Image (cartoon, rainbow, N blue to C red; front, side, top):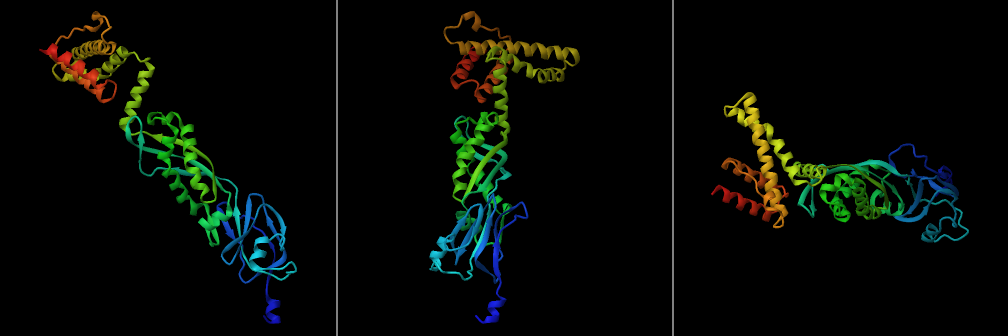
Amino acid sequence: MGLMDFIKKQFIDILQWTEDDETTLAWRFPMAEMEIQYGASLTVRESQMAVFVNEGKVADVFGPGMYKLSTQTLPVLTYLKNWDKLFESPFKSDVYFFSTRQRIDRRWGTTQPVTIRDKDFGAVRLRAFGNYAYRITDPKLFHTEISGTRERYTVEDLDGQLRGLMLQHISDAVAQSGIPFLDLAANQIEFAKALMEATAPSFTALGLKLESVTLQNVSLPEELQKILDQKIGMGMIGQNMGQFMQYQAAQSLPKMAEGAASGGGGGVAGDAMGLGAGLAMGQVLAQQLSQGLAGAGAPAAAASAPVQSADEIMALLEKLGDLKAKGILTDEEFAAKKAELLKKLG
């Protein structure tokens, strides 16, 4: 290099990053044709780390603090360049700053229902969404695995990958939590904890730490929501099957009254007909089901119930079939009641 070229050469005396925006995770210090002056000052602020890269290889990593760059503070770079202790000339390396502060309120959610395995229902489809927070903890690993030599790497550049990792581990989280699918909505904290434990290792492999996960909503498929509503109803009536059957019959009263009215018994007469049929069916169904559940030890008087017509027996069979389909009656209980009612038809 000629004397004039040497004089024109620019040297860097201070290396620092003031983080002038909220989204940058990694930032390369602008070197151009400049070189770092031996003895220059490196300032790494709280919530930052700095990495020196020499000829494509990560050399030294600096945490928060102020450093005077020398062979003592750059041991790996000194070894790579074979500098001796008297080295005092400028040098050139790429310097990257990393923001290590926590990135909060990042959103995750299912764009399409995710199929998971549940111990009660087999395969079910789940929709869920919530928030998560993370930070960079290993800038060397993050540089080699994610940000690379880019001048700037932002939160938005990383969001898609991290959101995919969250969704990828939903099934693992459900399995690890041991929470039945119907209880997920009522155990959001436990589910979020399980999702965090299942996903954290994937974040660590990228040089990140998953700080927190929240679950804001779990959407149940419509058919399972109906079963959940019935389960809640059973809890409210204290598992009293007779009351539950009467409640089911009462829910059918409007339709029965409407059917009676359309058959010629409109107005008050039709309503009365529907009401009478509904109450009778509720009593019959409650007594019949109580007999099946009580077993052989139940008194015979409690098991008997007057059946006034074949239509009522058929309606009762249809109702019992619905209860079996919903899992309230077992196959054995349904078969026993069906056989008993068919005998009465004969």
